[in-house]
Length: 72
Image (cartoon, rainbow, N blue to C red; front, side, top):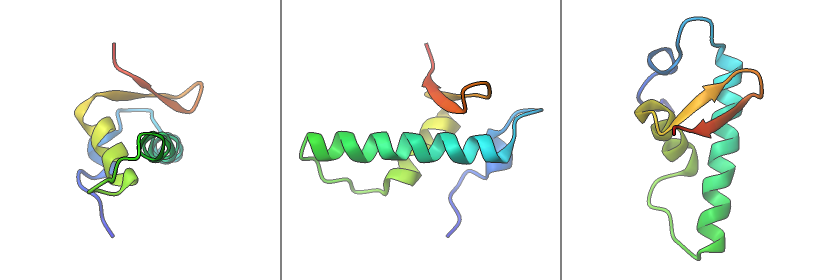
């Protein structure tokens, strides 16, 4: 399964694919946990929502911590 946008469109110069994958996985877990806590049914899969968060700039990659952080 291929998620759009492509990882190469999200990554900036010097950022690694591994870091993005780890950050997306962590964000997807957060989304799933929030949905479960709020008894919300997700229409899209958590990974797709997490990828969209990074692609839209809502979250950005922080290489030093290997996590995504909300854009302020």
